[in-house]
Image (cartoon, rainbow, N blue to C red; front, side, top):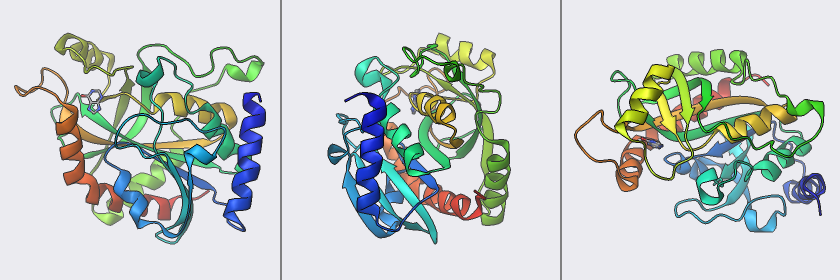
Length: 272
Ligand code: HPA
């Protein structure tokens, strides 16, 4: 089965499972954001393992579950778990999943992630709206695609109108929402202090190991994208303490209640 067929077949299968639901918004949960899934009401769950176009997930903490339901009264599809490029060395792990969303009629992809802060003013536990990205490894999930539409315009990859709505929602909810550029690195190792100084000089405010491939895939299929980062640590060399995945997850756990509150407020404010 080729990729396009897998996405169509997966969308057909999901339509059966979702009944009359036709969510226009999908939320892709990154590290630190998984408690959001527990807030979904009237949930219908489908494990990724039952969805031919979805990836098999290997990393602990990522359960690989698609949950449809209502969040703050908004009809959504929540994707708990993504395949990262550091698992396979390839950036196209979520290609089938994103194309399935498009085939289902989803219009907006809201991405969430955990990221390191490159800016002394953005502290661990705080939240950042992604205004733009830097694809540091220059990898693409579209390698091997044909057709002129592979030359995707990314000049407004993170939808300006959706960003305005997110800023408004955060202000109304009284939650500080920074805004900045997200630099994507392959990982899985953290960066060196020299790499962090390079990324700062590039003009990035945050660094992480996800999101950018899915943004490219989403823009390629015509989905609008909004992305939110939870800053879980100061990047390498900015503070004396060493970096660890466990520390990232611990900070994320502390910050997740506010992150979930923000996300629900944002979903309620999105016009799509
Ligand atoms: N670097 C890369 N990815 C990350 C970091 C970091 O410091 N923190 C959370 N994800």
